[in-house]
Length: 265
Image (cartoon, rainbow, N blue to C red; front, side, top):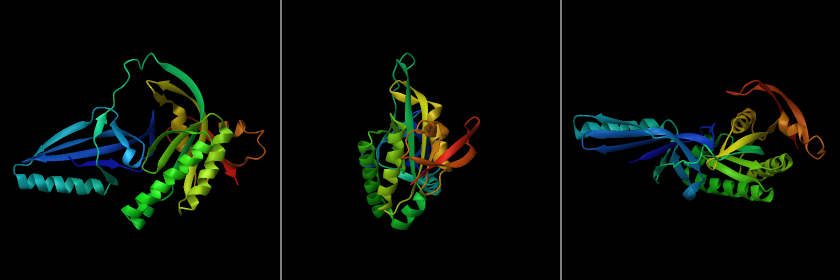
């Protein structure tokens, strides 16, 4: 059954990024469809994809095998135009901890969101083989800086990275270091940082803070690192980190308006 993962969708769910997968299989004159939301963990050959809930399913009976074949081909072509990429591995239904409701732990962290600007355009220009190599170097550079700054990678999907830090200064330092490192690859990124509480539930990170960090990153332009006022207020004593007021913004789906700041070189 061909599987397709929708990429470039930056809607943060409780444990990272949510994307959508779509599968098709033909048996004789019938076509079996399956689709739904998935979580993506890791990158490249080590990437794992899980259905977040049981996927929706549909059976289309086409009368003849030829009609079914034509239907499947048209359906696959249509999904590819919606920026889906092929998935070689299986999609598993993630098992939730039976004690999820009883194992709740509160934590505070600096949340970093990194996103490549115009990634689809660059991928189309370079082609699959070259883009795969560039992305390999990109993730290697990001992980090197995360290790240096003692950041913890939470999840990656497509060209996005979500990580957490114990200290906001470490998050800002890491963001600017990643920015400089990926420029040597011909890439520009946008970065968002926020400090907030989250809950560790069943081994997963749950909280509005992840959504806020994602929305802040979406407000950044190419080459910008934007932070929330929560980050800026915790760094008033760090003279080596300078900020410029970026105005008050409404973050999509997030209550109230938020004042953001741009990290200055």
